[in-house]
Image (cartoon, rainbow, N blue to C red; front, side, top):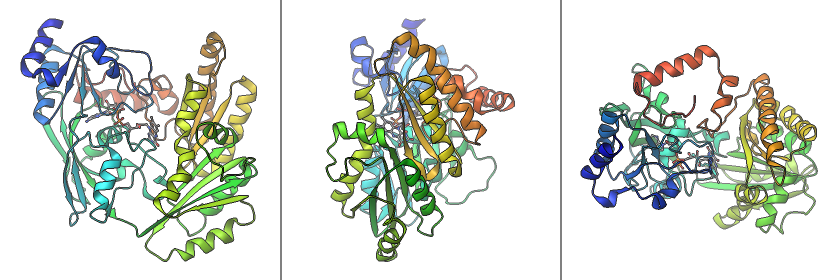
Length: 457
Ligand SMILES: Cc1cc2nc3c(=O)[nH]c(=O)nc-3n(C[C@H](O)[C@H](O)[C@H](O)COP(=O)(O)OP(=O)(O)OC[C@H]3O[C@@H](n4cnc5c(N)ncnc54)[C@H](O)[C@@H]3O)c2cc1C
């Protein structure tokens, strides 16, 4: 059977659109979440919607698994071809089809890099806010499939708040258009919302219509150093209850600062800073009001306030935060990355809990992330611990953490999704009834279970 479907693929697609050599497929056998290799039988590089359709028809005919893949930057193993079959790559479907300043929309192919879209719409005086830290490599297709968030969520929300419409290739070879280019839509069930965050398990996006905003006239960032986590948390609460409406409030604890500093120079920051907030504002009103308010609110408790007004100055401040992913990987190539989200008022509670858990279990746990929306990244580092001890304890630590998150009214993933790595924990966060509904929905869209199998549940 293998040979038959592969022959069909090779007959339909010219050789420059397909690879089947094992050594050439290594990049498609893992992603940022799963490092172990799960080889597909073929990688097909779609260049347009017809290519997607052809792949789907063959896969459906022979019940071959398809794993949609854009940049492979997800951190939960969502783009790994666990059951072999076809990896359907969108890296060549990277055209911005239209930017329309009157309708305030952009129409894009799924493989457009987030950063490229941001830059392009700025030329029209427009703004696409979602900004995952991976924005210079991750794609709009992947962002929609994971409902990616980012620092600017505090003011601007996440990817789902900008998706107006989708063209979706279904596994039976039909194409649906959900939503449209309208900014309001109360027409029946919201299939666009159902597709967002579906991690490639319900349908394949061939085109995405996004809402755009006017580009703010200024943007300014402040990096603030504090003596301890408590001071940083109360500064964040103060900000959120003020009328300032920050774009982002990013947090780094002492160890996160330490590790980031191992790869990025930050001589501007005092060596003894124990906690950091990176706070951003944008808008159209005079900037003086923001500067005055920041001075009033923080001059007493922040030990350092660095200001970034130009693009270069802001990049210098953000470098520390953006380098953390690589810095932690360098210190501990093996780690469990949790992506919890709690009601904002519960942040002090969850940070205290994590620090107690760290003492109790003897593994270093680094906390950082999006304090302004309650979404914290909790990285449990293996470092040089014995592999058996690590395997024995990591599930226990994660389970204790996630159970506490749920007790606080939180969720087990704020923005990274469930994918393959978190699916065992999904039942902690949803009821049996909900899980049954998930399975029913999957069955409607993909009765043969060939679309990104073994993901989410
Ligand atoms: C350094 C770093 C920082 C990160 N920071 C953030 C962050 O701040 N916020 C955040 O949310 N995430 C973050 N991530 C995770 C990751 O970048 C996001 O999940 C991103 O949305 C994945 O996009 P991608 O293009 O790489 O998609 P991929 O990893 O290729 O795929 C992700 C999922 O989308 C599906 N998919 C891809 N294309 C399609 C399509 N056309 N149709 C249907 N399904 C499709 C895949 O099957 C898979 O399930 C970070 C990752 C890294 C490495």
